[in-house]
Length: 220
Image 1 (tube, rainbow, N blue to C red):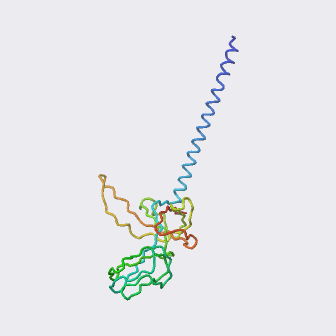
Image 2 (image 1 turned 30 degrees about the vertical axis):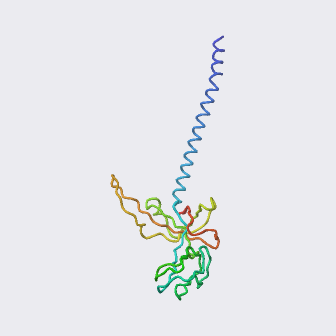
Image 3 (image 1 turned 120 degrees about the horizontal axis):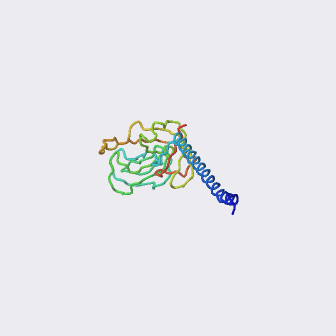
């Protein structure tokens, strides 16, 4: 075989290898670009969103109790009942205990004959108009970027990925009570604060007191 033939054969064998190397380099460049783009998108989202996984649909509990001590004589409601304002719920002694606002009954004491004192709840209820999504967030996980009036979305475990709309309604002015424990490095424990998101309970009647939720707050 002549030198020219040998060189041609070598070039022919080398060309696929060169093309392969070029393809590998191109693929590497594309992969790196995708990684950078993903990182940029993640940074942009993390800069404009605050996620709170530990959240709960909740409303303040309203306790209905007698104004004078007496024995429980009758109960007129059951757990889960929807009641109107000024509706009778129980009788203790001669006193009829009534609701002050409309709401949902959450618990009932049915131990007829038991004695109840003022302030001792016979029936408890919640006002659905006061339902909020209450999220607990560490002070170093974006709390400084959360403000009242910011839009928010949330999901509840009971309804999968269905997304609900709301607005930040309140940010607690003090941390949740917890003991301060220092580790070996004397690093302070991050304090936790509550963030409340208001939503329209008429628009979302399926949302109930006590449902677990996940919040996303949009800070820009």
